[in-house]
Amino acid sequence: MSTPTHLNPAVATKRQWWHSSTVYQIYPRSFADSNGDGIGDIPGIISKLDYLENLGIDVIWLSPIYASPMDDNGYDISNYQDIAPEFGTLDEFRELLAKAKERGIGIVLDLVVNHTSDDHDWFKQAKCGRDNPFRDFYIWRDPGSDGGPPNDLQSYFGGSAWEFDPPSGQYYLHLFSRRQPDLNWENPRVRRAICDMMNWWLDRGIAGFRMDVIDLIGKQPDRMITADGPHLHDYIQEMHRETLARRDVLTVGETWSVTPDSALLYSGRERQELSMVFQFEHVTQRWDEVFGKWRSKPFDLVALKSVFSKWQQALSEDGWNSLFWGNHDLPRAVSRYGNDGEFRVPSAKTLATVLHMMRGTPYVYQGEEIGMTNAPFTAIDQYKDIETLNMHRLHLEAGLSPEDFITGANMNSRDNARTPMQWTDGSHGGFTTGTPWIEANGNAGHINAAAAVRDETSVFHHYRKLITLRKTHDVIVYGRFQSYLDQHPEIFLYTRTLGGERVTVIASFSDTPVAIDLPAEVQTEGEALVWTHEPVSQLGKEITLRPWESISLLTRN
Ligand code: TEU
Ligand code: CA
Image 1 (cartoon, rainbow, N blue to C red):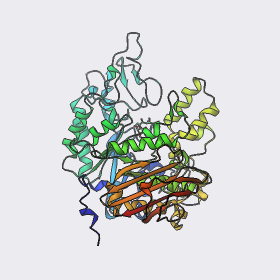
Image 2 (image 1 turned 90 degrees about the vertical axis):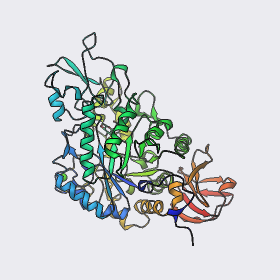
Image 3 (image 1 turned 180 degrees about the vertical axis):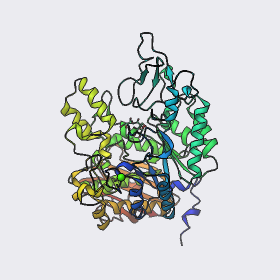
Image 4 (image 1 turned 135 degrees about the horizontal axis):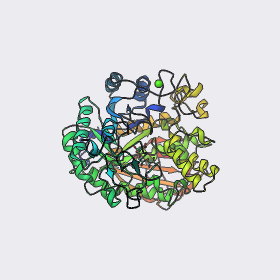
């Protein structure tokens, strides 16, 4: 009889429930519409809990559901303690929380506290004048010496980050849209109000928070500092003390600026900050130095592997990784990193395998588990995202051709991830009985959840298997990561080792067969764990992988 894995003496890291959990991200607007108004909603999510339970996920990360004028689809919050009417009511949220809990699923909310909506009461007050008690909740500055903005800080959505407020003669800061004024974290009353709000939700039994652009809250705009301000970690530690301490929740910070060193500040076990952060190096690595994601570089597996290896090594003793290919801001994984045509199914499975077999907590973005693909939009008016529409205007003004812009948007626009979840082969993929707020992808006829659940060989069942394996195999959760064939442009090969157990993962990222010589260390015999084409339990000196084939096997010694 083997030792029960929860007693495995080789596990050095203190166990946390979220180490072996898989998180599923829901973008409510595009998930499931219950009432035919074309907008996904909370009752829609409730109706899909059985599907999620079947998939086996432990946690739902809900993109914002709060009251909002929806300038940025809810990332512009006008009331943190209320639900947007198009999504539902607080009672319906309570019902979702309870019904998810019955299925062993926790709900993580999106904490968007770098900024509010300009419709938030705090901002409406702040705009009343320089001596309003809420003025200092936001960041106001006098005009620069030329009468223009105080400095050249740019908004992530394009244009100046400063907006003039004629009545008071001052500018306010907005690192995102002008309808998303930045909160002033230097003000202790702001920090107090945010902590109170967080406790209000935590007391209702949520499982944690995903923290939107949390690396920006320590900004010092006068010194042109946005990310990683000098008091950033003080603020997060204070937040931890005031809200998270003594609660067993999952927290994940969205940190585009994070490095392996600063990841240890956020997620180190003695730091009292966050469970983990999202790092984006595998994403930005393919962005152009000048035009960013609107002109991307060709796929480079060697570079991609080196990013993953670096992060696996960096957080192997302390800290914790989050693992993801996509989210609501990023293109569809299979379109971006795989082959969404002929090899859609094996490439979606292989991407899942290489990600889920690494050390860290995996995140699945809605639709990824059925291999949904990018939106094939051809005209700018099919796009709805504020970032895409702003950038379209600015880039065309700067001389980019409309065709080139659409090519870039097809590849990288945030709307690729926001087309409706494809449930059936019916109209609009079964997302709504009405007209969806954004067009559904035309391929729901063959890419949909109903078909995937029926077919044991589908991408869905592959994800299901990976999610289960993480719960039953400590080596997948805690094993040491070692990569091989680092310079191979088409093969991703690594092992995970814990005590006497080792998992070997071999994956092809090629559209044609690839023959390789295996390093002596991985020539072994074992139990096939998960595979794209057929189980392999023996590895000799040579192996030929079919297009996008991957295998993984478990060896015990
Ligand atoms: O995203 C942060 C962010 O920096 C993104 O705007 C990013 O630059 C872009 O999407 C890259 O494609 C977070 C949220 O995830 C995003 O949806 C919000 O729009 C943004 O913050 C503002 O809250
Ligand atoms: Ca609806």
